Image (tube, rainbow, N blue to C red):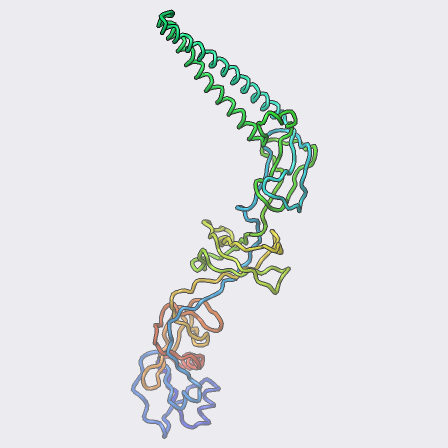
Length: 397
């Protein structure tokens, strides 16, 4: 289908453009009509092109950066958070920390009274007593061996007696090694409960101390004095909030543009005018089947403590620029039925529609994924008029 749109008079050309109807005939100022154009093309004279405001530009393939914006939640940094639980069955005898307290590493948070303390001390004292007894037996066996060796040298004892005393000393040495191992086991059992095995404090050490393994802020205290606990019962949550996580959800369609180490800007409602710099530290390994999104974990500094775990956040991820691709103004792309086309200039004022595959739109420009290459010339202004002329003309005209 070829549409011929020459110009007769300037006024008539303007009327024809406004009505969207092609004019026929040949202007006396224009040369004779061009040879038949290829199928499905629009033909405009030079004057008509000027009146229609047709603008043709060469396209250029370039990489366009982008900022991905999504939502997220401020969360505790698990690598800086201690969730402290009970090691044994017992009763909380006292608490020494409250929510909001800043504590140092090893600070005493609470005390537990447990029968395992008494059992542990009993095992330790028995092991120490057994070790002392075996040490005495070894000392006696060593003295007996030395005495027997002197007697054998003086021919006052037999070699059989010498072998017997040697065997007794070897047995005592082995028993001492076993006794020392039992003392170490009992000591480690007490240390596991947080109790020193120093016997000078044994009488006063009847309470299992609950201590924090790291410095931070007490965020939760889950027990009070008198609370009965079992192994694993949560007691306290202590976290260093000078560094937090922001867990953002990113659509799988743009996941390839997010990289570990990329910069992030975090905004929260409480400080709407501020942006908190962060860094992507982890990209999730699974996709949420319901939302088709992936969790991206970012680390944000919080030395001043203004960010609070649980806050909702707006997250801007600095996307990685995609591969160079042709972009044209949105108005350059027109819909012809189920096709999307741009108009490409040919010889003698002809404009041929070329089918293209489009991508994302951004700031008035659309991505062309297929149909154009770097350097192609397309109509960037006046494409709608060309489409109108093409659709208004009868088949085969």
